[in-house]
Image (cartoon, rainbow, N blue to C red):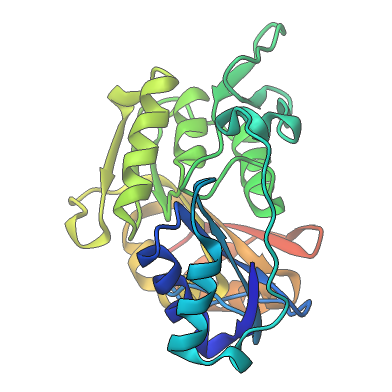
Length: 288
């Protein structure tokens, strides 16, 4: 692991990958919050730790020398190396991920866990490449809304589906059809895989935004970010029938009024904002 200025982070990552790193990650080296990076970008910090994972027999001295020759030794700070004990990494996350309950009926469980409770709607979901396991307040707020909603037979649009957690939850809670949309093809793969794991693949269709078929939904779910949500107000309105419900999250508490106003201007009657750990969930009804 090494600390570099933000303008070098991507280039150093590429060099580590070319040198044989199995994976490369970015970490914050200066306690700098990044609340809302632009869509399609990789967030880095002013001081970024670049972490490369190599096989045990890798020549790390040669890797370091190559980086210093390429970029200059003065560009690197806090170089460190650590040998990790072998373990079943694919299950290591279970130490921190347990079954979680949202509302009265809905549970999210990792593989190998179960819930013995009458009437429970149980979603099996393991952490993966696509965002969304229910641990973040924005996801939890949306799941709680879904648990309390009347979804029997509903047509649902999950815009920015990530792992598919919201759309799959809607399907498990009675929705008849779910359209899952994301700009990342990997998210669509993860959504379909998770849908099959939960036996609701027949209810869910996935789309890139520009491939979305024509339809009108009863419920729109969008857990994204404040600025994209405001930009999407017209597009999401047109995907929702008059009288349909919209649920928005990925919004900081201080951004909630601006997002609510943007949707009120488009004909939505917005409800009081729900707040959890500094994040907001907005809900409303399309009136016109």
